[in-house]
Length: 94
Image (cartoon, rainbow, N blue to C red):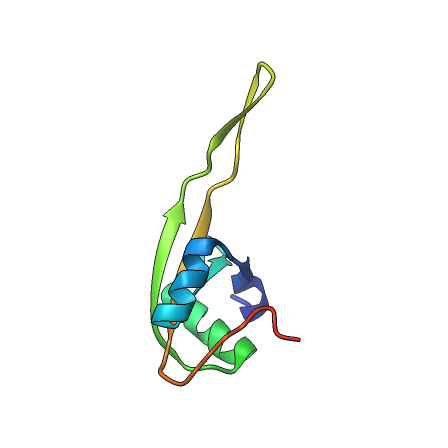
């Protein structure tokens, strides 16, 4: 799998920003078919940081309602990437 298709976007919420401050962990939305090895290679290559550990979560899409019609959001995969000590990754650097 191409490293540019593995990582889709950062997952920035209040909870993930607290984790990045205290545990040196960032959350990233990744391709559903990507495994931990591919995610690690993609993060290290694209962001030039050293990865310590990766935890992945398959997130089920929610059922949403619009009027009397129901629809389902897509399932997606999230990866919690723990960086080694001294490494940092900020998605909003200028």
